[in-house]
Length: 477
Image 1 (cartoon, rainbow, N blue to C red):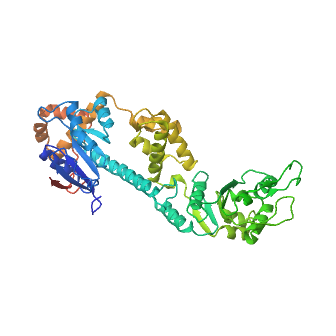
Image 2 (spheres, one colour; image 1 turned 180 degrees about the horizontal axis):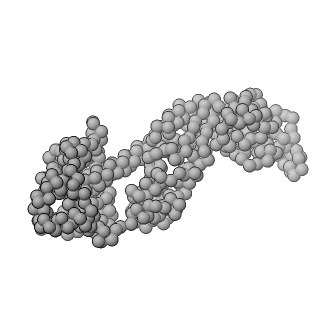
Image 3 (cartoon, rainbow, N blue to C red; image 1 turned 135 degrees about the horizontal axis):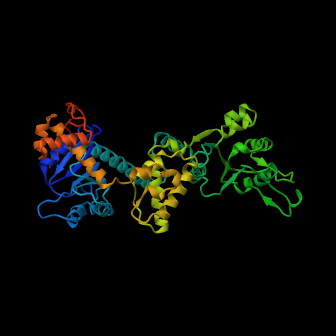
């Protein structure tokens, strides 16, 4: 954005007067730069000189037809500019829109544009651009030593957790990761191990969820031959295997009370015995635990040992649920789409606006794990460059397929006439005689149209300073 948080629009049109009208109509919040040619207003050293590109692809002289429009888009395809492109065309047929989208255009709209629709489209394009830039930044960060594997998020709560994780990772202290199921707790634990001095040693993970106490005890501490019926040989437990490295205990809140005392002893004395043995074994581990339960409440109810809780909770790293990550959902979805597209040989490079909106409005009870599965399925079903809303499961796309369905030809024509008359009435200060002359219509026919289209003709024109009339800053290049 510009210094005053305006969206910077590079408007390429051969009709300078038209460009200035559009620039003024956009109003505050937009900084419009007019360009009379169709060359990207950027360079390899400054690829982000604008937030959105607006191309006027209406016919000029003999330059008419599909090939002429595609030729004007081509320079932007081959440039380093990353800003989304919006094409302004005269006839928005499915064929024209489809060909332009294949060439990398973000969206299209017809001329004369509805100013409110244009503002909304530019803001959506800017937001989409910000998501793509953040994803590129995160990919670049993944190439550095401080990356946290595939953990992605740029909301404030996620960034705070990531910053704390990077500081804690090299320090040999116990860590408690909290968050709902599917938020990426095990992934964060692996990232902490990888960034720690123990990264060349074993990372051993175990979950005690829904397991009987005797089986959990055997898994953690191992057993000697003959320790119980069926113990045919010596078995090393997870503590022993993790010696020198990191032990990750998932769902620590499900650990039975009897084993909580044994775990506390290991943390205090760094020793344990296999089942069926009286010989203490020394162990050197870093312990990382995770839970989706509220351990403080469990301590108050007597379901979790208070002394063990404070031993485990030296550093707490909370992972917020996906529904609280806002625009981070689109970033994650784009990340998974790129990964699965490469895996399955699909040529996907973008998410449609409706697909992003459907993803962001869903509650995500399964969190990141559910999102990953949804995008994997969608990539398999997709057959073009764009992941569309109809590629998503039915429980996500309810209400959105209807929103993207096109109106009938008659409805489109009716809406176009209505918007054109309203805009012209405002331009003419509500004077119907002047409006009729501007539109080339007989006054009687204009009156009939106003009645048929249910236009409130007595409505005064937009006041000065309103979004419809306020001037935007427009520069001509």
